Structures are given as structure tokens and as C-alpha cells.
Amino acid sequence: MSTPDDLKTAGLKATMPRLKILSLFEQGEARHLSADDIYNTLIGEGFDIGFATVYRVLTQFEQAGLLTRHHFENDRSVFELNQGGHHDHIMCLQCGRVEEFYDPEIEKRQVEAAEKLGFTIRDHSLYLYGDCTRTRCPHRK
Amino acid sequence: MSTPDDLKTAGLKATMPRLKILSLFEQGEARHLSADDIYNTLIGEGFDIGFATVYRVLTQFEQAGLLTRHHFENDRSVFELNQGGHHDHIMCLQCGRVEEFYDPEIEKRQVEAAEKLGFTIRDHSLYLYGDCTRTRCPHRK
DNA sequence: ATGTAAACGATAATCATTCTCATGTAAAGC
DNA sequence: GCTTTACATGAGAATGATTATCGTTTACAT
Image (cartoon, rainbow over all chains, first blue to last red; front, side):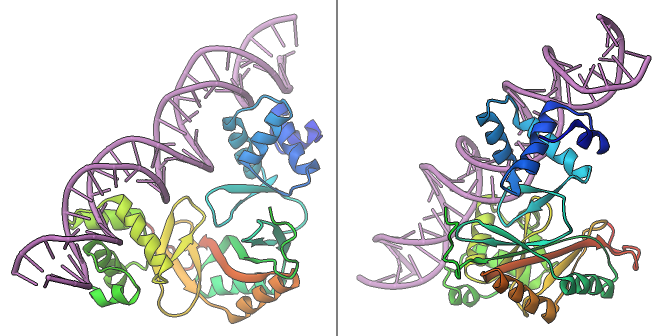
């Protein structure tokens, strides 16, 4: 479980819901979690929590720089722990598996494209969608 | 106004709501329209239409390949006429202005990154977010 | 230990989008 | 041009994710 200091450092009071949620990201197997995932996991562990708290805490964690919020091509958001450097994502449309990649040349060219148009980039999102055919989608649900 | 044949060619019955909506994209000044934009514009012109129809028609147009649906970093979808080639987008976080760009090297590297991970790309989305500082955001609303 | 501001959980509210269904209409045939 | 009929429409209800409200609880500085 994450320590209270992890939260204090981020400027957040160390409450039980926050510790539980942060632990899911730090100890859990899945790197990308939705509010629903988190709510159901904690309820399943017998911990009493509400959706309001889950969403509140996720937003606070995002603002504190602990998590990144992703908007994949569907309706709900998923969150990911900010560890390691920036990376982009590719999602299998068949099984939902998410893989990560990073290409410095793509990053550089994004900045250049923005500059040409007179923009200063503050944020960007790059998502690829496809089929993991080579592996015949072993993660198919 | 767009012609009935534009719709027939796409395999759709030429109805008034569909002609009106297609016209907004073909004749309008804005290239990126939300369902709300379309509904309000048509109602403002005295044309009687409902949200259900707007959403239905947009989905049909997307499936027929006439429009592309974009999910910017907020909650609602915007649509864009499929004309000219593929391009990516950059949006000003201050004024909402959207500009377009295309970099073949970025496109190529996306495909390569996907291949390395055993994926075949079916779709992708690249959005940059920033401030159009150089121009002092002349489009500020 | 205790006071207080912050955080909590339940529940209602919101917002974009989709569904349902009774009515309207495009276009094919007479 | 006038029926026919399947498909399209508009109004409003329903949905699903997320956010706001509010009375209660809790972290933690005093």
C-alpha cells in the first residue's frame, strides 16, 4: 500500500480512500484504470466508497500530477500513474489491450508543426487503434 | 445547398434534414461542427429539427464516409467533412480555434511503431493543444 | 484530547447522446 | 399525379458517465 507521505508530498491530506486508490495504481497489475474499475475493485474488497469520492480523488490526483487522464475513443476516461517518461498509446479494437510506445522524432515534429501554425504546445494526445493480428489477439476478452 | 445526388451516391435517401445538415458543412464557414452547433443553426434558421435526427444523421454520414468524427479533449464530438486528405489537428486552449496540419513522417512512424508492437493500424487520432500566442489569439471568443 | 476545515458517501442533478414510438414523407409503382 | 410502404422524423423519455449538493465524518494542528 502507498504511504501517507506519497500524498503529503503531493499536497494532499492522507485519507483512507486516497491511499486505497493510489495503491491500486502502484500495486495493481493493470496500468490503465477507469473510475468504474476502481469503484468495483474497492467495493469488491469490502471497502466502502462512493463514486463521488472516486471521481473527486482521480481529479485531484490528476491536478497534483500523480495521474494522467486519457480519453480513448470511447465515452469513459481511464487514468494512469505518472511514472517513467511520456509515452503514447495503441489500443487493440478487438480485445482492448493497450500498449505504449515513444518516438522522439514524432514528438519533435509535433512541436515543429505547432510552431509553424503559431501555437505553443501545452499538451497533446496520440492514440492509435488497430488489431493485434500478429499475436492473434491473445488478450481477447 | 447540396444536391440530392450527393446523398443518393452515398446510399442515403435524400431527405430535407440530411440535405440541410450536409449543406452546413459544404457551405458553412466553420469546418468543425458539433451536434449542438448544427441543431442551433438550423433552429435559428426556422427549420424544425430534433436532436435525435441530428445525431442520427451525423452517425449515418460518418458511416457513409462523408464525415469524420473527432473527440477533442472535452466531452462532446465534432464532425468534419471528408474532403482533401487526412490531417491532424491543433486546438487553442484559449480561444478554441482549430488548425490542421499533416506530416507524412509522423504518419509513417505511427505505422512503424504499431508494427513493432504487432498491431495493424485501423485508425488513429493525434490532437495537439496549446496557445496561439504568436498571434495573440485573435480568435479569442 | 479537541476544534475546525477538509473530505466523505449517498443521492440528486447535469450533460451529451441514444432509444422509443407515433406520425410524416421519399420514391417506386400504378 | 396518386396511392403505397418502408424508411425517416421529432418529441420526449432513457441512458451512462460525470459532477454538484449536503449533512456527517475525519485528519491533524493546537
